[in-house]
Length: 164
Image (cartoon, rainbow, N blue to C red; front, side, top):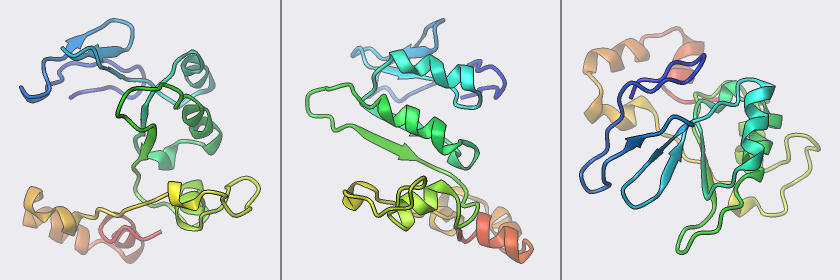
């Protein structure tokens, strides 16, 4: 898949035959043969965040959440309003850890609301897992893993060890 960060522009996108064929749509989504849609959008500026308010999703994926303000993530979370049979509403988030004060660590690590800092009423709904390069060694070259392991301490902890 190739997407530019300024204005998304999909050049290629492919899924396995089991999932069906993706069809490109001009208004920001791909449609699978079964009617499911994968929407591509951005939370990098206020206008783009506001565009998602009229939509409902059963699943939201925030990619590289270290670059997404919590206020924008909250708006995305409010769009988890689509009800579909046998499909739980869920948000998935990935990032390279950026610091213990980042909203993702406060929410998923400390189990606190990042704004009020109060304990979450439903902490079991805020789970996290770590996947670091050594965990994915079968898909990475040994040279790349070695280069990450040899980074200066601060960068090594973030990009190799996944430490906040």
